[in-house]
Image 1 (cartoon, rainbow, N blue to C red):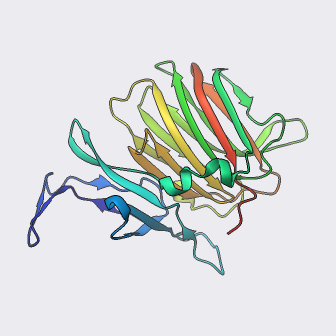
Image 2 (spheres, helix red, strand yellow; image 1 turned 60 degrees about the vertical axis):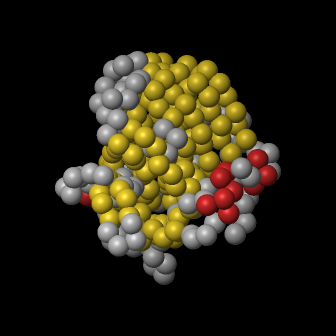
Length: 262
């Protein structure tokens, strides 16, 4: 699954590309985002679209995936020129407190010293359906992020997890499903990455997990990565981690959306 976008001018007959013809601008860096379509004539000239999270060869019968979260689109000036930005639609995000019925974890300035810390010690999150917003700073050689849908054995050792992390040395965001469990994953793309060239030793993340669907938005919409996980029963823990150095979660909010009805 692969989609790209183009930036330029269209006079009604001819499109003039701002970039060389061989320049690929990636719409989503995950392995499931496909056939995205926009809404037209929205209020205040809003630009919103939605994609099909097609599960590729993963067996999900009798369904073939689901739709992504609706996303607001915009353009942002970058060193290389105008680039597309996308974030979860504001009409949904602005209702998170209502949708979560006030079930929210909110923390600030959490030190993470080359290890992992449990983010739900009081078990406020009732399942793998939540929305995370976080800002993290770290040492220049460190990796830091979150371990989602964890499953632990009787001794407390993590045996399954999906890891969303930022490698500051490589300026690379990654989603690693190598040890996610569930047995239904596409073996060729267990680790997916986004190169964020020239980024400082910090990252802003917005993560949407809904049982199996996983959508990650980076640096206020600079990039997105959409994929699936298939957690086993009991894989419900969530933790923050750092390795190869220390990190600080400057701010963290997690909304529990497990009670939202379709």
